[in-house]
Image (tube, rainbow, N blue to C red; front, top):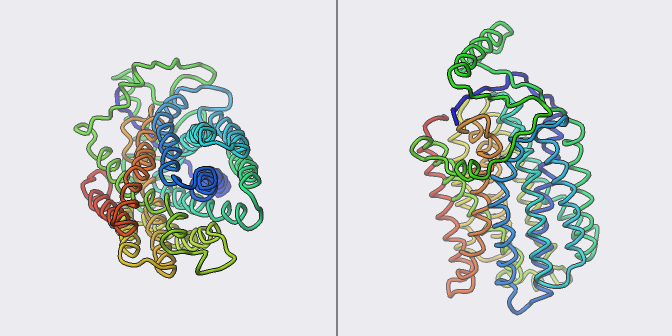
Length: 458
């Protein structure tokens, strides 16, 4: 496909940004609370003798589903034409299926039931999130993307805290918690899908933006970009905005499979962004995947605090993680927009996450867990606020935005798959949790260093 690029120039409103942040908050809340609190508790009750291996199976199957779903649902939303737009049907449909799958999980009493329910939930999470993220390059100007990504990042980071409090403090029992997550998903995700609108056409902005944004400058830049796009379109027959609303675009499986390969030679920045994200998110997956078991078996949380459940300890650490992330997330997003520089914040976030893992490599205690959670929150906040904005500037072609973002999200899916697979043998080896966290620190450090191989974004 010819690579034609247009960029939106109309700034999105604070209300639009808030609804997007709430939608991402709801999705991440459900998947994180499910993976950190509800599924580990459920698996430990069903299969206490082999809980680590059984939990890895549940996570791995779910992650494989997201590996398939990320580019698939992205490509399908790229090709969707309806009176409701390309993205909104997938956001609404994903939220509804997600809520139904969480309700299904509430009544499962077997490992097979958990595997099936979580697999469907992951498919639904992925459909809604892939479409929601694609609205950013669709509708947000480049110089606003750091702020939008930062606000969405705060929503993603606050979601697990809200869900954790509901699941462990306000409610008792896994069944009630799963049902509460289902209701919260509907309340948080549906408003963005139902009450926002997608533009019929995508205006273009200039190839480079100066520090000022006066009306004359914006108009001149937009006019120049429109002229360039018109020439490119006339010379290539590529259509950036797609067919008219209501015209269905057939899904071509062979073209989809070919499109899954984005040549690292032609798009090296895209490839380096993918690999660096994989390394950094591997650290997160390893750090939080076995957090509940770490507190129970290594820190002996319930012995330190008689009468308290280990799930409450997880919520405390999630609260520390969330609160420590807010200021770094917003500051990193604002600074990256202000100075037009993305790489330093992404690198700093990865290195801070590495420092978090190193704390638990050398110290095994409740205070060390709190300190590590604070560092992890600050680091991941900086990373998530700016990395997503950076990636939207490296997409190969406008016509495949959601598909290409889905390919980027495969890094997250792959880390969720590989994280438990890598962590389980390390945890059960002689090295135990210190070895596992040391390996996680190495992954984050490598990912932070690879950011500097990207040349297309400062």
